[in-house]
Length: 148
Image (cartoon, rainbow, N blue to C red; front, top):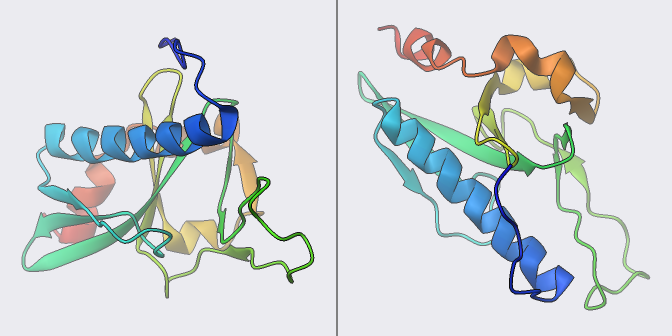
């Protein structure tokens, strides 16, 4: 397990920093696997990165981090003192309109789970990593999507 929040930063601020670090780990793991990958610098966008899988094909990637053994496949929800709780809930489940794959980063180990968005549609809004084991370190999936 990696050291976390050694400086004692405020929990809300650290949550944002931790999410950003999961995105960077995900992008780095894609590049180490041999796929050019760039982070999308659009805050709260429907995808976090773009992977060039060759054959003139780009994949939109939503990166989700977890440190507790389960992952949510939803977006749009935010918490904290700055959020008005009177506003209608904006949470939605990711769909093919949002991204092509969800890449889950296990913040405890850096292991990645590569899940096609079509498979996400058949799952509940969240899942334990134990139930996602077939997607763990499944980098060949990106080659398959590319037709390589």
